[in-house]
Length: 101
Image (tube, rainbow, N blue to C red; front, side, top):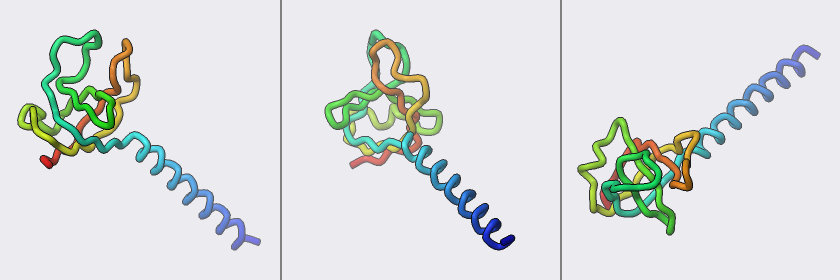
């Protein structure tokens, strides 16, 4: 009896871990396109934009200097910032890495 309760507890623990991982993965985005410096917009967040799969995304980064990648075809990995989009603007992505194609 004790053995089955222990195994059930382990199963529940692992189930909880896997669902936490998938919710984190749901916020990870992979985008391909050309990074552009953001100009005047109706929404006022992000420093750059990228168009990927016919959608525009606002970009910001505390770890990557996006200015180095302006007007270049790149692959971007980042996470969706909670609470965005605002004012009919695009989703805001916190960029963690950029790779030139």
